[in-house]
Image (cartoon, rainbow over all chains, first blue to last red):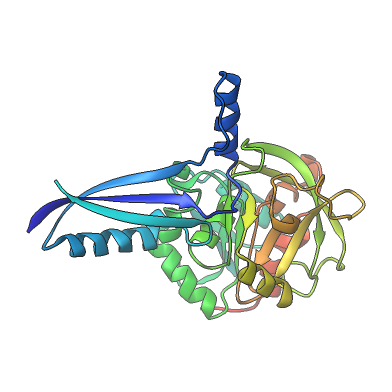
Length: 83
Length: 230
């Protein structure tokens, strides 16, 4: 078994309104920053032991499917690295 | 008949729901989610509140508790289920109903009285009204914007499963009357069976005359029109 950290990034699908990101963008603009757009995402860092990086990715993928993301509004991606 | 009002940590409309149902002569009791679905339950109400502190997404945690699996099975056999506010979010997260309720267009918590139009009066929940009837109900939510992908939404419309839409006092469904940015003003939808419904407005807060309106009464009476035991 190897120790891995799986990173699951959950973001809204393109086209789904993100009022929190819009509010954040406006706040940045009020501070004088110039930006075209801002998107936010949730990032989950999951430490786990697995036989291989593939297995670690599979398990993290299932976690995203079953809880971390809502397929109606979210896309997600999984990245795995040694810990 | 006893309607089980499921209480999670963070639910806060469970007592109101029992009181409103009891006021209508509908036997109801609170059930702690860890105690499981009672065998003699003749209906389930998922009440409003902030289960699990709205962590991750409103309703995400509660929607995956074992009692929701039991409720899903019972619902498939015809047990009536009504999810209100956080209960609606839980219902969608649990897959009882399609779509999702997410952050309001305003990015703010909104607590106000709104109007909804009855889009389909041919369901247990809306049989007390005529199609097109306008109800005044309270909302109180930060994550009430209904979202569904195009295929899901088209199917809901085609199968007449849109229950309520936000409208103005005259019954016109306008963008100005949409409090939270919901897709096409959707405020409530049906599951795959008409005995399962979720909605963001609070009928239990529009049931006792002293609280300023009784337009929600007919929605709760849906429990009387569904005659099933599990």
